[in-house]
Image (cartoon, rainbow, N blue to C red; front, top):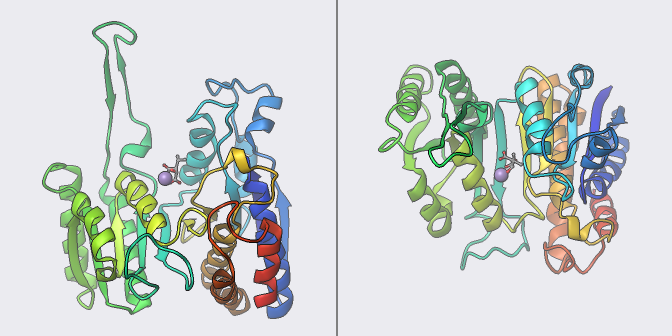
Length: 364
Ligand code: IPM
Ligand code: MN
């Protein structure tokens, strides 16, 4: 029995998650596995209704009890986080980052695969060229929250924001990336993206760990390195160069938005926050799109692709072949659906949100 906690979240999140759940129901029947879901209302509205301060987190967005409950699931399926009535950062830090940290989801897997029939702004590039995976470290770097103010709100104020790299955190991420690349068996090339020429402490640790682990345990994987700025250039010019990329948190955040654009936009880009030994969380990487909320015009493909990733990752993790097959099947159904759509952009798909969900179910 596959147990999934569902957090629709804000804006269009619940709408796209509903389509994903529709596809889950259909594919579970076809592949013959059972599952149960439970909804958690962890939206910005729910936070405000409980007396949450819109400007500064005064009560937990997600409580300790809820976190402990969430740990018991096989996976979390998340829609979107971000409400215009709540100051930026409150929900992102209070919910999304908190879950990533507390559940120790130390890998953020963001495939950059252009589906057939999907428009890419890159001239002369197709699904064969835009076809790589980014593994973003998800618990350290600039995201751990260290820093502070000195003389705040005075003319002499100082703010610091600290970046950390721990050998433990870097090593477990690198090992996951080497394994991923080996299992994928494509070009067998793992690219570390960092900035060793400037971040001479944190990224020196990454560089040394990358080479030591690679030499010792992954001689079959070719090691490659890009500075992050050059990587942005190659994403646009030569995306076919890449196989698997491993990258620290902050740069990973940035390059995966660029990656999402070359794979057809936020309407299709999926992501997984993975704890290989615990509860992982899957989410479309786009935001809550407040202006499209409730209009049935948002693209659910990214959410459905996140569901496919959930099934593949959790199926593999639990050794449940039916579930893993279901993930593959959903992925294939997406590939058949995309070419029928006019565009992957909200409001321009030629179909409504729920029709696209139906089309994926049909294609299963
Ligand atoms: C993402 C988002 C988050 C991040 C924000 C909302 C905290 O941009 O998932 O990429 O920076 O990780
Ligand atoms: Mn981001």
